[in-house]
Amino acid sequence: MSDKLNEARKIINEADSQMSELFIKRMKAVEEVYEYKKEFGLPILDKKREDEVIEANSALIEDENLRGYYIDYLKHLMSLSRAYQYRMQNGLKIAYSGVEGAFAHIAAGRIFPQGKRVSYSDFKAAYNSVINGESDVAVLPIENSYAGEVGQTLDLIFSGPLYINGIYELEIHQNLLGIEDATIDDIRRVTSHPQALSQCHDYIELHGFETEDANNTALAAKSVADAKDKSYAAIASKETAELYGLKIIEHNINKSGENTTRFAVLSKVRSDSSSLPSTVLMLTVKHEAGSLANAVNIIGQYGFNMTALRSRPMKKHSWQYYFYIEIDGNADSDNGRKMLGELKKVCDTVKVAGRFAPHTEI
Image (spheres, rainbow, N blue to C red):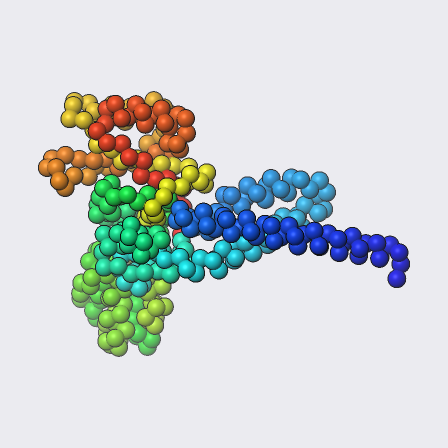
């Protein structure tokens, strides 16, 4: 064996030894990252952060022939880091409202793939489970592109102590589900939540199906699975079909492709992560002419683009309203703190309800 080969192998062994120590050091830091994400209810995958790390670190490799291999190495290392975090996530409890197979159940599973999803009977019960420590985070809908805002969730966020640490968009595809040997020609009656039936009205009318309301799409699928009737079908998601052993007879039957529900992740503490560049504000304005206009102007004057503005009635005060506002930018910045100070002069209440990354699809 040549001296050159021995020397090369010696260098590789030394490098491997150093890398093993650095690997342990890195994975210990990954544990800290996970604990932070768990505390603030953040998902494990942060694509923006991974892209930034790859861009910065690959620039350190001057040899163009090696740079591509180093990028592959970084990607694999990050994949291992995510896998390790997913393993730690097994104990994370995620509250949602509804039953197994409902869209909230699906959303919670996509945001926290290895977490334990816990079903609650309604939004308030899921929300309170985080307050009293039964759950780590809650995943609740705040808006649907077809039906509009989910007022009950917004009311809980306005009056309660939990913070938004992410808003995620789940595109809803409704499918016709039947038992294994059913075909489209067999179907005479369909069941689903009234909103899903409405979304698929044109398809239902075209085929002349009778309709039957269900409390939610998952229960509709369960009733079809239990009935074992070829003429009986449900309208629900692909995941629901898999859960109840049903076959998708026809895909994407809702009349509009624009059917997306936005889900908020709520936890006890508010994140300051740079991966969440947008802010949710909630406020009530003084009973003076032009108060709301003044508040909106202040937001604009400090350079924040307002992307959403909704009003909600305050239940304990007749004919009074609070406002839900989404803005591009960080309200915790110097400029943001100045804006909040000015808002407090024209508002009775100003609440920074949390932060999120806009248009994050799951």
